[in-house]
Image 1: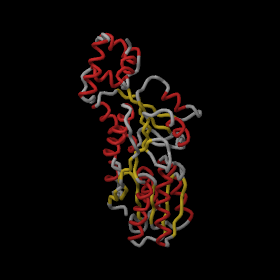
Image 2: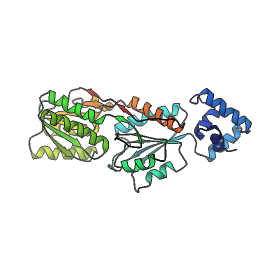
Image 3: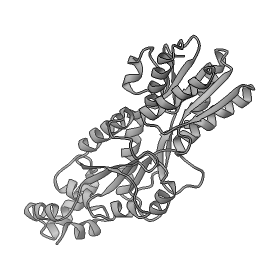
Image 4: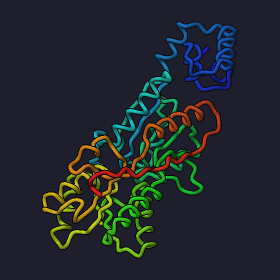
Length: 327
């Protein structure tokens, strides 16, 4: 009998069977006892398990970054590294192997190719990029899929992520409370998370009757730096800038410093993410924190529930304003 056949009899995933036979504590005692009884009944021995594990991809979770909107963005981005580190630690603790991929979508079926590869038991996507429609389509028939990203009403795919609208509003309200009246959003307004940050930021500015503008730019550091430098060269500096990410905010700080503009005296700067480096810029960066430790725990918890055939829903992680020297 194959491992997959035993999984069907037990009503669980192949990965759950493999962990139960290995005595892993991630499988509850009742389920483990049922699987072991079925294994004895059908004479499934450890050497059969080893053979099946060699022939079948069991116990592996895919970690994928779909970078449709930013083909030159890299895994070395501090936000990606932090979240991937938390996810990898949690998955290894639960007995899973990890298959990490950075995907530049080249066709509409790129996600189908990932989930149908036979190499993974479930998939974690870090970000939606410009692939929201593709993720929606696949999520309707592939359940063990969890996404770090923005949530939309009536969507099918399960998301864990920051309340980006609230975070953007929080940034604007913090700046407005300081008396800032010329606000500028810097970043790519297209991806869902960034779009929500901009929406919250713009709504707060409108509610306060404060002027706000958008400097749309790709999110690579050099692109952000060049866009801000060109903007500053064309006229007076805004008195406040909200960058769509901390990495973008660091490029903003560099451009302002090179232009001789005092931070935060003339221009205050707020980022988003609270990556480790944010506390070590000069000046240190005021930012909106996403609690990635909690987010990663929620992603893994929801994915394991989906793999086990249990219900699991989306969740939102509240953002927190972290005030430092830049604004």
